[in-house]
Length: 247
Image 1 (cartoon, rainbow, N blue to C red):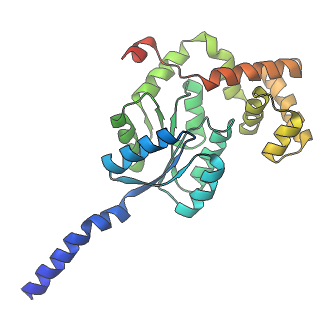
Image 2 (image 1 turned 180 degrees about the vertical axis):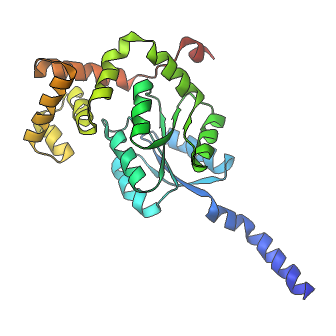
Image 3 (image 1 turned 90 degrees about the vertical axis):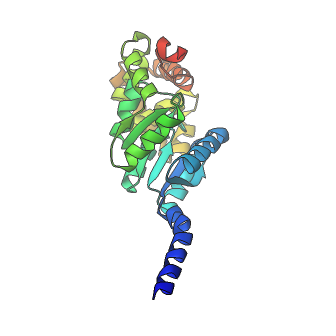
């Protein structure tokens, strides 16, 4: 009897690392930059009790992987693919996975919108690896989390008047309108936007009309100009107070 007990104990302990691997929380990484995905995978796999189960450079690929892997968490840059990131956050929520936004382009309104679309945590590229792992652990435990650099960026953006127009668009436009606004700012025609979004040209034009009304703009030329400014700021924007940038 003792022999079989010892044998069972040895077998159990030898398989413990394998069992641990299969019980680790699974994470899907969605980011367009290979080096970012590589760094996150290395950090998560070696520095936590979680594991990256798959990677996606685009939201199109992520939409294929999401139902296949059914990850516990999805880390995604909400600024990906012209506003589609916010739509994808809702899809992650509907798939019963938890979304974590990891982005370089953040302000108070962006963070608020991310949470409204189902994000459980928001982290910036400036946050330390400890902050990233802390956020993942918090979300895994069912808590919402805002990383330190994101909190500072939010505080800074609330006091900066230069981004009021940028934030106003994110506040008042719907998810579909924001998608069109992004594409408009990148110079796409009505036909191109319709083809990309899988909708009719009339639907695009109807959305443009509502966007002009919401933003208080008189014509399409002003709408396109403001959308272009929006995109140019958004592409290079991470609002961080000087104190945080110097740290």
